[in-house]
Length: 148
Image (cartoon, rainbow, N blue to C red; front, top):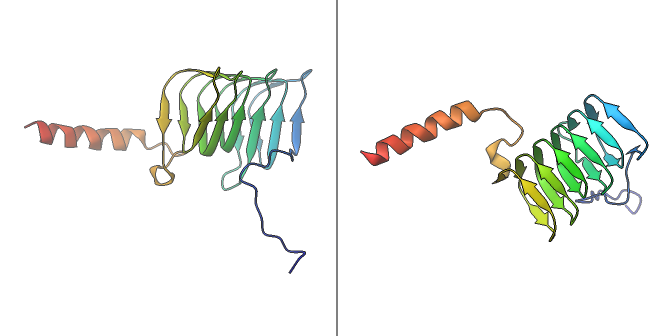
């Protein structure tokens, strides 16, 4: 079965379906699957299609003002918002993130800057769900029982 390779790259670094060029500014949310390469500016959330193995790559001249949510994220530009990578996050040497960073696996080069919290999440923690209120209440109740 030579013609049927069922190989998915962890990071499809060479193949990007969508390019936002350096002379482009997008106002509003961007939803995508596959690969998204950003040299321009996005003012809005960047969200990968749920269940996809999508990759977003922000070049050193790119900027995103809004949250970035995808399985694989490569940043070498500026992000003002939270970054949530459910599989792999790479912060290159010119990356500047102003916001919280949620990741499963992270690579961070010397020179990368994060002004926010780094929060490691595993697959079972529900990275892309909004169950913070329930988990916070449960954790607080357990802590009170231990102190008595």
